[in-house]
Image 1 (tube, helix red, strand yellow):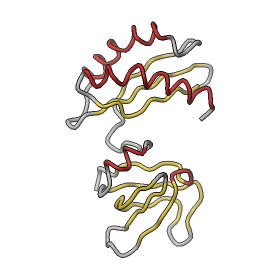
Image 2 (cartoon, rainbow, N blue to C red; image 1 turned 90 degrees about the vertical axis):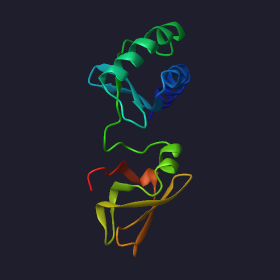
Image 3 (cartoon, rainbow, N blue to C red; image 1 turned 60 degrees about the vertical axis):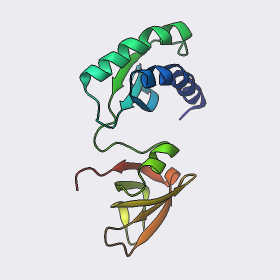
Length: 158
């Protein structure tokens, strides 16, 4: 992620997190991305009971004015508030720590010998970007770093 985008995300995070918490929700992730000619600010929210369209609308309305007032983004953008989904990507340290023991799907940037590029297992350990995945038999473990993975998601469909 470019430095400008990273700084923007941090500024937006500091504005919207207290508002999201006040609404009884969790701020899952913030992404500021350019797609074609357009910029999108995506605010991902979550809760123990999941989120629905009403939650997304409530957060969108609640953060719109504070974002305008703080003005962390100078160019035009589209604000999207959404759920991270069932197979939510694990991206922050607290995501990995929260879901130790959960089933995950990993897609690597480059294949791992004997395993391939995509595999499933249980997230058994996490330490500062180092992830340990154990297969469902409990017999085999693989250690990877988050920077070598294209993505790591919860596997809610097993």
